[in-house]
Image (cartoon, rainbow, N blue to C red):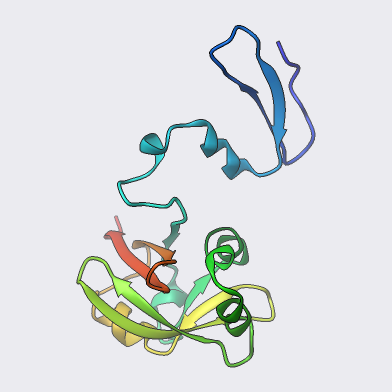
Length: 163
């Protein structure tokens, strides 16, 4: 049996195979553990596994008119899926104009994606009117987003109402 690897930030696991032998390895990213489970056990049909799930904060739904997205979420779930031109544009001062498909309402909206100096990203320009007001989003609501590589847009879904 493999000994646990106690290096900080790394997850030990044992690879299973049809043979009687097993080997031990260490992953550098916790999310890579998902690769050990069948796709059907962790994703919905048609889902590519790159969803960002977020609980809305007060600043996401107040008069700031912007949705804050963490640097980590963007680096793991969106930026690697963008082409070079869009990748560069969203990190520029002007930002990138992006479409966002509202999965629940079957409607498309245009926003701006910009990177802040802190490294976080924000969706602005119509966020408040097109999503907060229209969908009646409130602090504590859960949403999810993902980058649609086929249609070059975000997909938005409201998961539930705050409890």
